Image (cartoon, rainbow, N blue to C red; front, side, top):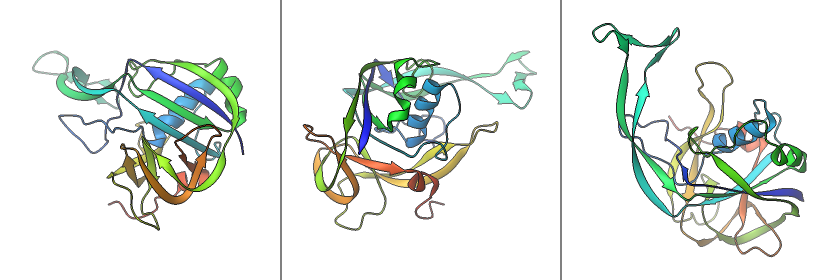
Length: 228
């Protein structure tokens, strides 16, 4: 299968779990919605699984840390003005982030020109997590039944032996309406430690040791199992 490979690095990244309040926890691998958002920024338009046939990626980072951030409460009319304070209401929170992240992204060749000249800044999570593209090239992906993986999301459940992982419900894409809400949330095995797995949809680039799970349009549009 023809593909482009895009290596993306940054100083920081943060992928807030949507179910967390107060102390904000980051996922250790970006959800598909983040990757679609990154491609949307490059293309200059909102992308959904209807316009993206597939994506595949793996992710690593050097360490965890915690930021102290100030967030602003919003209403439909804009920032919330606290009547007691007479000013915009802000709340300090702690938010986890990842240090020196690297995303290796595979995508259909039609995105090559957009990634060469991104329309908007490429970010790995928050707007301050600005990233750079270190490598962009044409390549191939070959389907494999079993391979080593690290820093990937594998759709839950797997038919064979489950990988050692945390299982999280993550958004696959975001609705274009305001406020932004997940279009689909589905369960994934978040595989952060290198291990051999046997599952459907694994692809390997020639010369690489680590495979990537392919997320097709059908997978991104399906919730898989009930995550309520």
